[in-house]
Image (cartoon, rainbow, N blue to C red; front, top):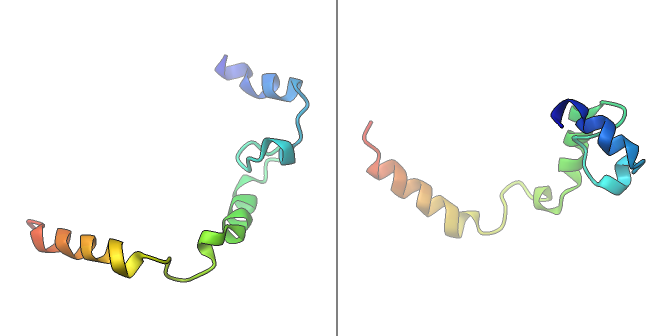
Length: 69
């Protein structure tokens, strides 16, 4: 099926917008569109995501203390 996957999906004649995926773009401009879509995501509105300092940073610091380098 893999060699024919693109042809099978194209046979259903869905638009790129309907599929909602930048990876399967008809025009092949995957990386520029992936970059554009990442900037549109609400998670990328701030430099540091909410909850980073409260939840993630303590975990990272704990792992650095426990690491055996």
